[in-house]
Length: 230
Length: 230
DNA sequence: GATAGATTGAACTGATCAGTTCAGTTCGGC
DNA sequence: GCCGAACTGAACTGATCAGTTCAATCTATC
Figure 1 (cartoon, each protein chain N blue to C red):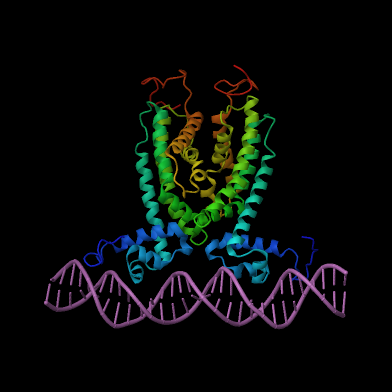
Figure 2 (figure 1 turned 60 degrees about the vertical axis):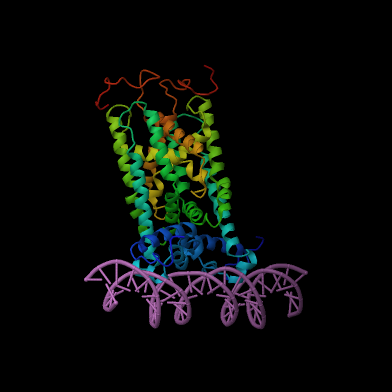
């Protein structure tokens, strides 16, 4: 961490640990936990096998570190994408399409896809990892998204009783086509197709949750629990 | 445990193949492809290891047969569940809740969940299996569901431009909470929770796709809205 | 330039497992 | 009641791999 760059020396002792985790991430994602060999990981990290044991105990421990690492990274990306969520409901549909596209890009991201595959594959061997990843990722994102949706609902532009549920459904509608289109994240997706999938999701979301309004900023027509008293 | 007696009937040579596939399904689902051992499968099938090679070439071939088997079985269940889809729109919401519950039950079914986990786990090793399973399962179900939705749309009870998309979104809304609630299918789900998830999905689906009616609390008049397209 | 600690390569152990072989057993059909 | 095909059990091969050991080497720092 405090080392300086040693480009010329392949055996510099700088962040071996980072290199190991990065290589392990690639190899695990490519071959799965069971088939991934520590020799392969060591070779791909440009590191001797004992160094892996020095830095991270063994294969199992390495796997846990790798998953925690991807989960944290994916979560950060997703939360960053949510920063662009509209608070100004002007051109709400366009804004939702924009933020939806960013969320969908996070979803089809190579590392996110690898994380999902590894979780599915190894949940039988590592049952605890599921909750770890869930709490460090999707749950936080859903919370954040729910908060943004609730603001729009409070302002009368959406009609939402349960913001958490709406947030989950928003993501579900955005992403429901993506696994099939990307072969569970193993095939790149055409940007046009991604955008089409997103607008389809946003369209249905707005059908369900947009407050029917002919006048801008009109009060909710039905059973909204907005700030506006009936 | 699979045999009834070791002297009289254990070596019937008829359904060895079935026993092998059934055992392989359990073992693969439990341990994954890489960690599953042919010795374990043979033992659990009550069969000698060479018999596996006689009937089904090797581990890889066995795996393909197993996945095709689960996919076909899951698909049959799902299509059967769709048989209960309402054509009579009387009490549409209740009917959708009922059929939605059956679909969700198919989704959280132990074998369906195992199929999803195995697909995610092994798609890198068996890229072709994804399309096989997709075509033999979800795609057929989506087509069937889309047809049913289109009939309701034609009759004026739903407003749907793209029935395929609506069918996909229906399923997405029904199932979006289930992976988290069942830990990717490794934990049983409380039937009440399942029902709650389904009604939440149906609720949003109807918000998005139900044709707005003039009478707020009742279904459309029986004969008033015929098969006229909107 | 000397020292201490990190790193390396290479070899080794012990275990697991896919796939094969084969001599003997069992069963259905004739 | 016999024949041939399916099945069995057990042992074997060859390969892979996690984890360990150790002497030699590198690097930073003083």
